[in-house]
Length: 111
Length: 111
Image 1: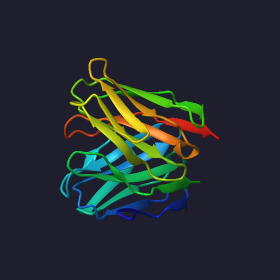
Image 2 (image 1 turned 90 degrees about the vertical axis):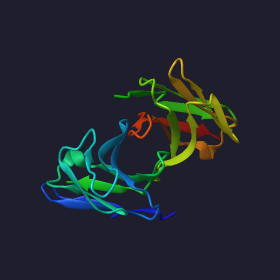
Image 3 (image 1 turned 60 degrees about the vertical axis):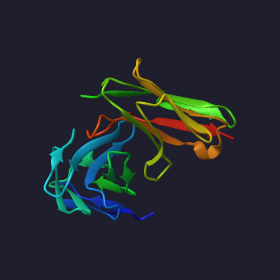
Image 4 (image 1 turned 120 degrees about the horizontal axis):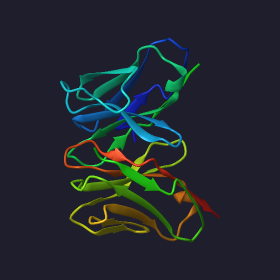
């Protein structure tokens, strides 16, 4: 299902480059999130937004920034990518205080 | 803040056996407990959830139990099949707060 779409699906970038990951949703949810997934560490929250004017840091926000361009769009930027930011990144949405709908993920490799 | 511990990290069973994954949480005010299944290379998807006013919930071969006094909840899968092989994540959530995830359990079902 394409209700939470992430682009790109895969990306290889060089150390020091700026990169943006994009997320768009058709769920109509107000809440959007960015997580990174590393083996053995589960899902760790980077940033979240409860509406267009609301941006909050998660547990691992250093080195990342976000922009909530509209209710349906939430982008994640790595200002100067470093190798330990190599991970699988997921966008997610929620509405009504219930469970998440995750995007398909972006596999990012920093070389 | 909330802390969620999930065990075991890896679980290997024979097809047809039952599998149980356990999570403990620290915040007694948490009132919503979802479980997500992540198949290899795919996004996490919500498979079952339970609210704090319910002790057990079933959906075909999967069930979740909640013990509020002990602050733990468990996922039970009966008659396991190879397609149950995946990483399972638990989470605990308090009201409108951000959920806290466990680190995941890799379930392997051997044919």
